[in-house]
Amino acid sequence: KAGVTQTPRYLIKTRGQQVTLSCSPISGHRSVSWYQQTPGQGLQFLFEYFSETQRNKGNFPGRFSGRQFSNSRSEMNVSTLELGDSALYLCASSLDGGQYEQYFGPGTRLTVT
Amino acid sequence: AQSVTQLGSHVSVSEGALVLLRCNYSSSVPPYLFWYVQYPNQGLQLLLKYTTGATLVKGINGFEAEFKKSETSFHLTKPSAHMSDAAEYFCAVSKAAGNKLTFGGGTRVLVKP
Image 1 (tube, rainbow over the protein chains, first blue to last red):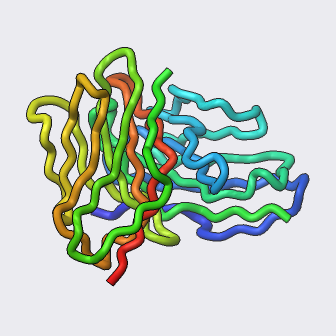
Image 2 (cartoon, rainbow over the protein chains, first blue to last red):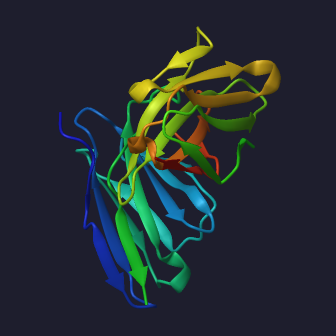
């Protein structure tokens, strides 16, 4: 079974630009979650999508948004990039329910200059 | 709100020695508990999880963890460290509904020959 894939793996953007990251979950997984990882703040939950609906949202500004398609693939978008948005963005997919483990992709490393 | 505390951001052990990583959580209800490992430039990989039943949980690569409700702890151990155990380890909790993981700050393990 193929794992979670994320594209692109690396990205360099300039302040003020916007960026879209993509995540393809494991086949059969309808839940996709996004996390931001930085040295200062650690791993923080951004949002979760289930069956094309945002079900949970973390404490991030509205510049961070996402969506999920009917095939469960998900995208997240960050608008008006700031230097502090430089991070590793991890996508995870799982079956529905907190007792199920989340399977993580390799992440997208975003650098904002 | 849930929170997770990992004692010690860095741990150094000798090859063959015991690995002990500490995790304490705060939750109003018993959560689901996870340990993940992250190798450089990679996503997170599940080591083990506790959902219900036996409180001593065995995972991959010789790791195990014990859920102690009275101490709100879920410490991770491995009897004999191997060089390949050098990585960062994250404790995480989730609630029954939804798939939001709350992570601890992580513990980076260095294994000395």
